Image (cartoon, rainbow, N blue to C red; front, side, top):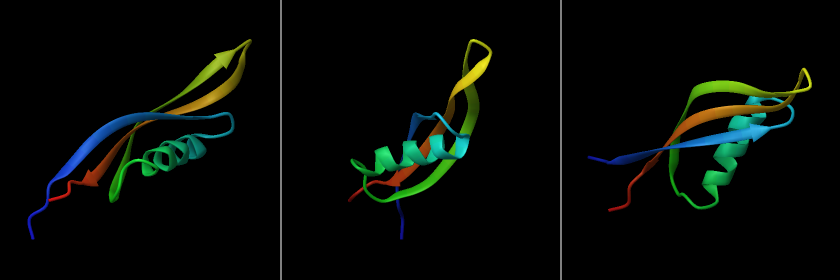
Length: 68
């Protein structure tokens, strides 16, 4: 069966880890998007304040199936 997917880009953040940052982005997206299929992590970075990491950030691409 032919399917069409849309891809969006989001940035998730977390005070504790990149994994949690990715999970936060997926969880937030899943509240308004149906049929999420794939998450691809494009970039990881951290926010630094006073020489300490204060936030982990993950730029992700999410794909979801378009409805007929």
